[in-house]
Length: 196
Image (cartoon, rainbow, N blue to C red; front, side):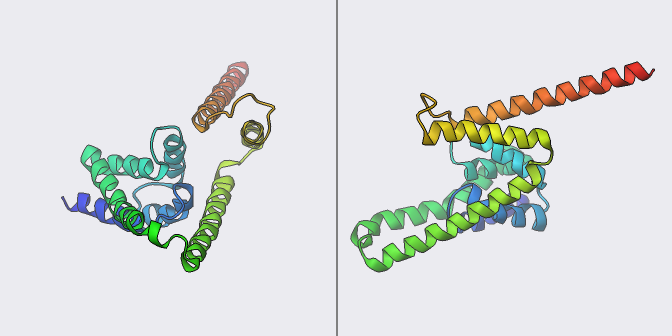
């Protein structure tokens, strides 16, 4: 029970400061879950983000559920998810109740502008961390270029008839990584067979 409470309390704190969504919270998750708690590794965290991107729901909630499940099974997943959701639900209810009355106030607009700037910085920080630990060789650099081009062509131009969903890009990148790994293993096995 103590472990479940620890999961709930940890994610309650994370949920209270999770401005900007999934990628903006990556540095916070790294500090809390990788460095302080040791519940996961940075590599596993990146994998959870990739899976969370292509599964239904909010990335940050999906990641918290994955880590909770890893720690304590289904009960851990529920505790982490409930902890993560508690504070945002209360904040959203409060904002929904009062926003219509105060949204036009200059001070409120300036506060939201400041929050947006902060979120941009957090997302850039997360992208740089992911880049540093993920784009590590010519293959991953080429894969990055292809995925970036496909995403940009679908989002900013009319070259592609439709925007490719993020989940499809994640699955394609995963398939390319798997194919590259199988090809590398096959070459290594052939090289060892030739030396024998």
